[in-house]
Amino acid sequence: IKVIREQIVMIDPGLDVGKVPVFSDLVSLQYVRPEVGGEILFGNSDLPGYDAIDPADPDSYLNRATDDFVDLTVEKVGSRFPGFPDASITSSYAGCYDVTPDWNPVISATPLAGLVVAAGFSGHGFKIAPAVGRLVGDLVVDGHSSDPRIPATDFRWSRFAEADPLTTPYPYVGAGQMR
Ligand SMILES: Cc1cc2nc3c(=O)[nH]c(=O)nc-3n(C[C@H](O)[C@H](O)[C@H](O)COP(=O)(O)OP(=O)(O)OC[C@H]3O[C@@H](n4cnc5c(N)ncnc54)[C@H](O)[C@@H]3O)c2cc1C
Image (tube, rainbow, N blue to C red; front, side, top):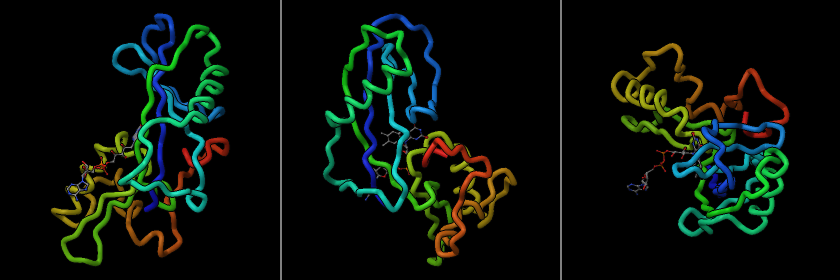
């Protein structure tokens, strides 16, 4: 698992835009979602391949966006949402993604009896959390998945050694690693 910084910029749209949907823009490679208080959260989806990751130190990293990233935000949000002439940036933060070679988690028993690993969520651990909880519980209690919609083989640790990464059958070429 490699560690990579993910930067987030908060934007005040400068006008009442009502309910903002969660929006993944796979052309500009950005995502936005509403935040409590009427701000819009901007995130970057233009991520490097695993081999190109320049690892961050999870114990010591810049926990806000860099000036370059703020400039990128202005460019991307400004071109996708031209109707916000009075938008302003209110704050930013950064956290760390724990990235595996196929950008999918390991949820797996291990050669060490009784040790089940759930790690390497590669920046999408929240959205799949219900299925993760189910699979972890099944692996701990029964040693196998009880739900055919959550195949344990997809997330097995050994897939990397077997050169059998977990990839989507429906890739979108423009989306880089956000597949
Ligand atoms: C900026 C950013 C934006 C993200 N946006 C999204 C998103 O939009 N959608 C999405 O699905 N996912 C998103 N993610 C990813 C999501 O946050 C993670 O995938 C998810 O939180 C991982 O869960 P986890 O339980 O594996 O790890 P964590 O949530 O990191 O939990 C690990 C816990 O272990 C604790 N811990 C660490 N070491 C020890 C120790 N030695 N002893 C005891 N406790 C310890 C830590 O304090 C922590 O509470 C984002 C992540 C970041 C950084």
